[in-house]
Amino acid sequence: MAQNTDTQEKNQKTTYVAAIDIGTTKIVAIAGKRTDNGKIEVIDFCKAASQGIRRGEVLNLNDASQVIQQVVSTLQQRINMKISHVFVGVAGQHIEMISTRSYINRTVPEEQITAVEVENLKKDAYNYGLSAGKEIIHVIPQSYIVDEDMDITNPVGMIGKRLEGNFSVIVGSIDSLQRIKRCVEDASLHIEEIILEPLASSDAVLFPREKNTGVALVDIGGGTTDVAIFYDDILRHSAVIPFGGNVISEDIRKVVGLRFEEAEKLKIEFGMALPDGESENNIIVIPCEIPGQNEKELSVKHLTGIIQARMEEIIDQVVFHIEQSGYGNLLGSGIVITGGGALLRHLAQLISYKTGQSVRIGYPGQFLASDADKVNEPLFATAVGLLMQGLRYMDAHPSTRSHAPHDIRQTPRPAPAPTPAPAPVTETFFQPTERSNDDIDNGFGDTDTSRGFSVRQEKSPDEKTKDSKLGSFLSRISAIFEEKEDDENDRM
Image (cartoon, rainbow, N blue to C red; front, side, top):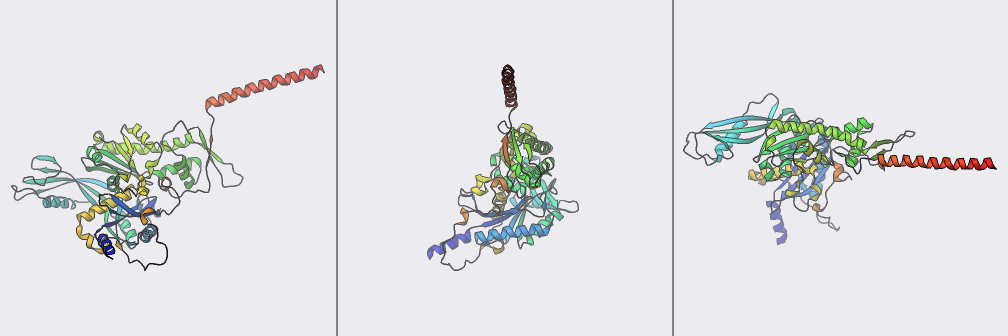
């Protein structure tokens, strides 16, 4: 009995957080907590194909809300908890980053600058005059100036008469933000905080050293590609490129003449950003559903060419934004790619070749507890990052922990039935489809597994030449035998 009491007290002290990643191709609901060693323990997660969303923005409220309700309801059942408040990510072309400056003249310059003064200076930046239809999402300090001293990271404790702050203001379209809020609220949920998705992804996959020495995070999703540049531990630049993995599948669909689902599957199974010597001579045989029509054939080399052309276009846009940021020569840690699109084979090598930067794929595993391997994938970087941001928010607002609506509270369990106990939730992770993580989202809808592609090896030019020579030799031998037979017939 005492053990049960201790368990209840421990559960009451534990802060649980729920988050929703609303993406172009998938919606993920995830719940977690911080372990004693500071790692993130993912209790469970649920995902489903997105509906009513295009390029990161909600277009159809009803469709999006139904999917959100579905994934959250399933997650609640699996973890036996009630989810009422969630942290939600936001992305899309409507996001902008604006620079502004705020200052105060201190009445008692002999006294040390306090954290309250710095916080008030940041709050003043929220009064930035926006154009109509815009709303502030985040204010991110860039540097401070105390009298004549510039480029100060933390002015607390300094002495001066004038305190200035340079800030980056992240703004979004009011209409787009309202649609996100509406579809979440229609699913009977309250939004605790809206978080810029590149900020969340960066928390999940970047090492502190990378943020300090300079790094460009490139999050390749289904509908968009987000670019976030960090230097001296501060977000310096953010941009959205209106192309993602879906546009590659669309290119394949048009060139080869397939359904989008077939093109998607083709890309996932055989797609590469650069050709390799092992498989470029392979021929992909695509069966046809219509009786009387021949099957299609596509060389892996041709498929790679289609993918590479579009990826180079996306990379050119990434390079443009890196140069525009003014930090192109300060990326000491190069480029980190994440998101479902980062799983495309040889993509890191292509980006490194085009940019001259070191490139690695970002996984959120560095911050996850050891039993969360299922979410240690680039396509879950944003979802894990939202959990991390949510826990940090709870730390900064301790009062929210004691408010029932702000936590995930355990629902009363029914009386024990004479049946075997279910397996622990943390041992299994709910997945609405039967595909592997690689299939889930390089971000592109369901694939049709009823029609499998087959591959045959195309002969190399040398092999074709050898076959041709052998054929000619055999033809000459055959001709000689025929001449001998004719001569023998004539003699008879």
